[in-house]
Image (tube, rainbow, N blue to C red; front, side, top):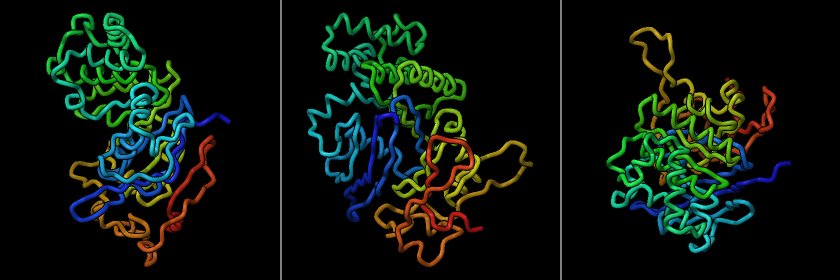
Amino acid sequence: MTAALLDVKDLRVGLPTARGWAQALRGVSFSMAKGQTLGLIGESGCGKSLTALALMGLLPERAEVSGSMRLNDAELVGMPEPQMCQLRGARMAMIFQEPMTALNPLHPIWKQIAEPLCLHQNMGVAQAKARALALLERVQLPRARERLDAYPHQLSGGQRQRVMIAIALACGPDLLIADEPTTALDVTVQKEVLALIQQLVREEGMGLLLISHDLGLMQDQVERVLVMYGGAVVESASTPELFAHRAHPYTQGLFAARPRLGLSRGTRLTTIAGRVPDLVDLPQGCSFADRCPKAVGDCPKASPDVLRLAPALPSAFEHQVRCPRWSQP
């Protein structure tokens, strides 16, 4: 069996709010091996980005974290900040959702790429600048040498995202986290950026954790998908299995709401009734109960167990669902 690159067990995150503590993540568990690609999907506010920030040690200062997150057998929960700094940027890296806010507007891009090289690989300035140029060429930034001294505001959105990818890849991390890496990019640039990430992941053999609400993107980019809702994973399966045999009512609702080619003019898209619940007001049991067409009286009260389904398609991954009524019509 392939050793786990990342092993997350019963991850729970509490955040302070004006109305009290909110359980933002509730028992998130998953694992992935080096070279595997894993996707997190769900509506905004379901816990996708918070999971990534927890892994990177970038949660708000007063956040309460419990459970386990192991990267190459190193426990991340409770790790002192100096040790976390040695891992962050070196063994794990993140491509943030909006590069314009993630990049420093006061420094040219070569310095921002060189920083992790100087910190983690003890490179001198000249060597780090040369490596920065090589990375920019590798991520296919046009006229890379001319743009070494450019500032973020002088680049387009797609070019800034390539710079972010270069920074993330600078030290050859084992785990790459991409949080909505194509947000605000036009369709052509989206395709180029995603193809670039996939190419680099294959070449380096790193693990990829891709976060998105775009189902089509997930179908093309990852081997396995985790569906999140209310701070918990409600379904997980290989990508072909999930797209062919959706079990959880929430997953079924997400897929039913997709725009489809061939619909007649004026056809209204299917929607999921209700709203995403406030994290402070989540029920003790299933957080989707108030919006679920299959819910019965006990659903909001009893926390659903993880059920293992027999995969309908050949797969190395289990099909898991948190819903005792998944098979009910």
